[in-house]
Length: 266
Image 1 (cartoon, rainbow, N blue to C red):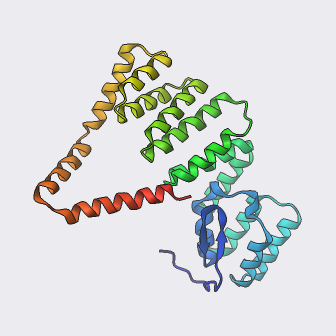
Image 2 (cartoon, rainbow, N blue to C red; image 1 turned 180 degrees about the vertical axis):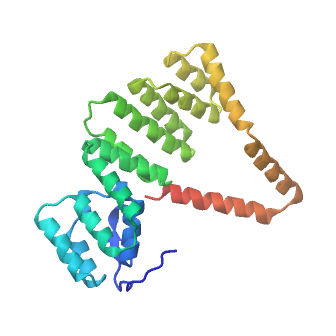
Image 3 (tube, rainbow, N blue to C red; image 1 turned 30 degrees about the vertical axis):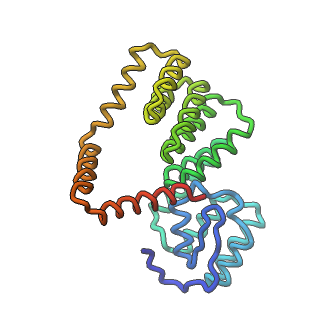
């Protein structure tokens, strides 16, 4: 819940990157605070200034922001101006935002876009993350390690959507670029989740693993599947089926469906 002390807007401001409407200056500040890595230069625009002036009733702030635009100021200046005037964020939160934006200014455009895609994934928006990773892979980049990291993270996003064939392919391509052992491990995990033993064996051979190394990764995944919390959940489901508690089962299914729909949201 966001407590808004200022007047709510009759017409909300639409933030295209997040498919989100904000109705107050506090909500705008909240969005900036929690989505700083999604902010791009086009966040600074006259439309937002006009909304702040007319709907946010902040004419002085709107003029200050327009002055930053006229002087070709930075996104850091623009955002800091909003946060300082709104009063929603405390000093430490504003410092976190400015530090994050300053860090982005020292990175290449490719790195910044990867960070934003990673943030989509971290927030459970896996379909949006995959879309951004795909666009990154369609652009020219010479850093093979960075490209491999994009492939790996895209594989993770596919795995979270239970799309294991796509995940395995991404992890394999990641290993080809950066030779990261973690990419091999995740690739074989994906094949094991598909119960594709032929794919498991072929991928391990193509990645240069010995039979013992591949078997060790298989044992690691088996141990993960035997974790106490996973076993306890399986026992809970078995008990619900035995007792015929369909209400609780439907609750689980509904929660899973809602989460999956959120994960697929663009």
